[in-house]
Image (tube, rainbow, N blue to C red):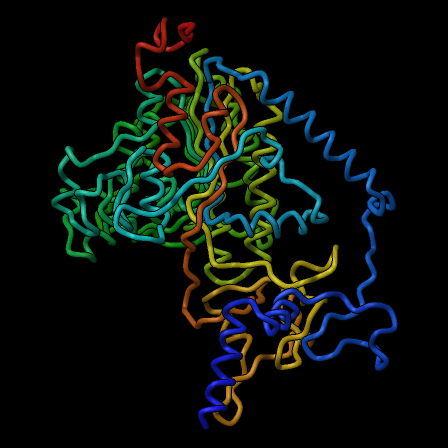
Length: 544
């Protein structure tokens, strides 16, 4: 018995200390591809790598000179973009947030675009950093506290918007104290006479866009019914929709586009789609918005109305859905504008209304996040591609000399891209390089938790077994990708998110920093902060 115990300890010691047994562990952790003829039975064996023939995207990829030339080209681009720092005034500032656009989402999105070597438009921006996303009181953030950070420059508590961490979730009394309110960069821009706007694919009262104009102790207080449902007083703690129409920042916004009609209409009123309003106070906030502004302000509800806006439009309120706008894969293209089309229309209005003083535009690709929460990876990644089209338009229709564009995310998600698939393998399919220990294939994309658990597992005789993914149409847009832990909704992730910047003072966005630094850097580039850095009311920057 003692000898057996000694041998066991010796084996464990070898594993820990890196002895001979560790070589077996190394082979297990880093499998290699089978060589031609190495498997006399053909096909793949249990847990082994199959024979995979490298099919180069381009024939020249087989040769070292190709990669060396590509590296030299990249080096030249890096030197050219970074040896000449742009320290001009950022007349225009655009902040694009891909809600839930984690780094694995970007990586998977490249394959969706056509291959691992592809790039999104924002990935071509010269400056990249990492943002730390935690809330003041939580390791893993939500879109409310993060909106307060990247728009207001202050870390806040989970679920709260536009208020400091002195305000706890659902604390109506604390929300009502203006000393706790945090002004957003949109408010800073308006004080400088700049035109301002927001565009989102979610409801315009949702957490991220609400960070532009609202101060809320509960992100769910999108209408007065929600405030009352939590025992709050709407007269003391106005909801997001009321704040959008009546707050000092909301009233001055030149552009408001997204979904959310139901939060602006009373329960007794139905919109053109037949959906009822949700307000209990009887107010029609859409009509109130119309009455506040001149005839050059226009309310639109569909794509045609948006595209037909007059060149004399001074303000636009576009509410294209009862709540969130439809996923791009589900939308009726003749009825619902794309995010790119909304951004194009927004930029047209803002440029005209800026009167030479510039503009601030917030843009959110909000449904990336929703796709991930339901483990609908295809939808999430398609929304990322649509988001990138809007970024591409904005960058190609502005000058890097005077327009700063920053692209980031509010938080990550738990989706990972794993395994040893071959190049060009379907990103939404099974891993073609390895079988799992149960002799079944596994998905390249999976989630740490979420509703995909139930749709990918079977219960037989008290045992839980994985379904055979070969028998499932994983390219169905409604397929829920596998989750390890069963949850009704997949959670956010706590890892850092990327920040991409192009234009004046884009170099400020390199490095690793707290998320709340972002609006301070934006403000510095546009002279929205320290007044001694600017002359002529913010039009020019003093030479250093």
